[in-house]
Length: 251
Image (cartoon, rainbow, N blue to C red; front, side, top):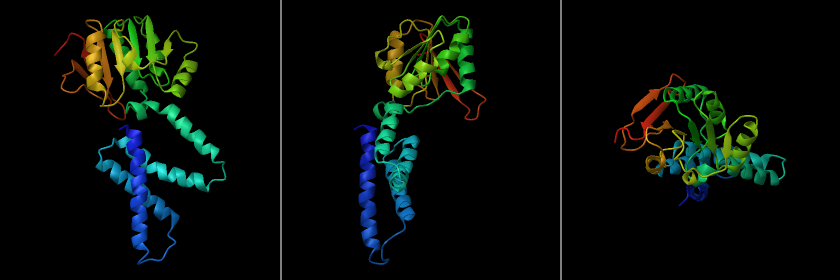
């Protein structure tokens, strides 16, 4: 079952549980009850149930915020249509979080500099960012002298169009392609900042398609049961780990 469906089901179960608790409480404390207490209790229940089912930490934040967002929307004088607009924007921005369980992670400046250093050290010619977000990495890699082609793929519609617009004056390519459909045969430097879930499958694709002596770089998430050829720990706020895998390197 898709995580978004699980999240909504948890919200529904939490509402039922809260209704039961309110019914029981009415025998001791006469209603009505404070709105903030009810919404806070609902948020706590959804987070508790989500953690119990092993949902990722970023899902816990979504589960916590969702009841409060609905409550504030109901209190606001805005038309209910704004709720639909906001929901549509969320889907357009975070499509991959719902479909692939890959949230919108953005690469910071120090990581981009490290990525450029990797490209220079290995004289990389063709770079691709699998899930390029707003395209900052794709644009930055044009500063690497050896790179003759810098490409990004992004399937979240709104994110893609923002990346496309921001990259319009750069010699780069931004495509609305699914990373699973992209042939990696011509790319000797492949970068990904995804999540733990797709890493094992992505590694199989990388091994099968990338050229010999190419480099696959994963931000924060290592390939399960595969020893990287190198690990770079960056001096940034989150101590970013870059896992480097040379194609044809260690087994």
